[in-house]
Image (cartoon, rainbow, N blue to C red; front, side, top):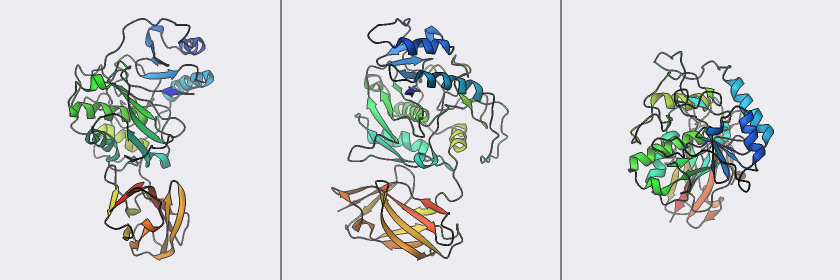
Length: 383
């Protein structure tokens, strides 16, 4: 099933008000009729290229969607609304409200994938704008979300988000929701509309779209006409949040400029993607996007690997080097648990031009091999 959760209602976006007309060459009658049977109103189905846009921000791909999955999807969402998961792992000095605003799609990104999402910008948007938008989510404290980019090569099709120009959409931008434990794979940007915005407004919209790729729905869906039939409530958020980056386009009469992440948007992703006990055991190479690139003056220069020696009670650690998701070298099987180790990993990793891409480290307790951690994906650059 290919389902896209787009944001055709993102702040300031333009929507077609024309009635939906079935075109024999472009339409998928079975999918269209299935959507109607699930309760979607005819006026809430709009045709955009190879997709049906449902309720302004959910896209279903024609002739590529499993109809049984469509029915299961809407049934799941309807049932999920009656099952609130009790709040845990979120500690706040504030009182937790009884009403809920932030919402999630049924899909989410796996713990492994959410820490190493590849990104690539194929538009002429500046790197500063892309860095800022993705960095807004990566730098939410006590949260797993992290990204890896920009590679000087094509990023993988799996577990990646590509920012792509598409001037055919009627919105400023659109995106999708997670599927198969991975984030939605692309964000469409109407560059003609984007060119009318300030940099701070562009960052606002891209941050909103990335939120959808990670599984967040519109915070104001109960009041903007979408209804809650296709979203799951996230505990710990207020009934209404004026500052939420995930409010729909109808919430404001203008495109806001980004200033900072709203408190309850951070609570939402902390709930969906919380840090585990041994996350961040490795402290270097580490960090959050976009600050996870190493620089070496010489190809054979040693890199000092660092870890929190007090986090795990162990006499020693095993360190391994991975590249392209393959273990390529055992750095050491029983390194004393001193918290640091100097190592010329460039000797073992395969370079591309002056870069070494797609590398990460694994640390394992010698005394208890069930305790381990991985570093973020990082790359190194050398003279």
